[in-house]
Image 1 (spheres, rainbow, N blue to C red):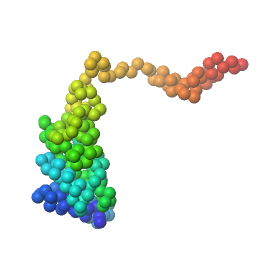
Image 2: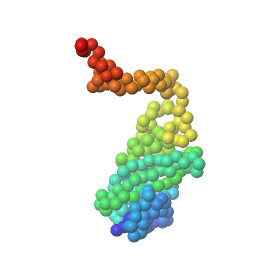
Image 3: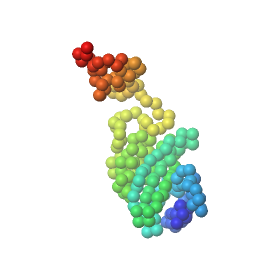
Image 4: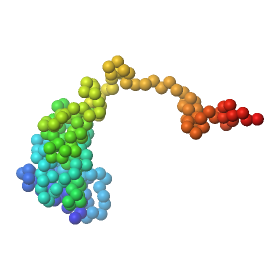
Length: 207
């Protein structure tokens, strides 16, 4: 089965489960399989049907996407939205699928799919931590990488890094000169103690 046929099969199966066909986005596969697309094609589903679509992708026998490869988000401030993208794989059918949905950037919320794929748990916590996407029904929606009181969500394209956090500067001034850095690189680790000009090691006792 060609990539285009596989995508059409997935689209038709999800259309039957949801009562509406997901739209195809991205670089659609060549029907003849003659050339690989520049990027992954995806199926777009409404945010309100996200969990339902994901559960169908896992449970329908003709799909069987039992493995969540990744779940990530993309901030698109120019369009006023955040895209959430799930990369799936079916070990039964040896095929991959990309599902995508879009959220209002001002208040992004989405049903959690941690009950569908347990691996989504930490992926969704990262979505909340770095992009501010609130996952409804998540079992433990806490930040994953940053402290709970960290200001904002750093993968938002308009996020500004604060000058300090709890009195600790978030930036370090570059104090070493280029020459000092070169000397440090020369001396560590094998040439420790050697004269950078190429002479004997310090204290080497050469004649």
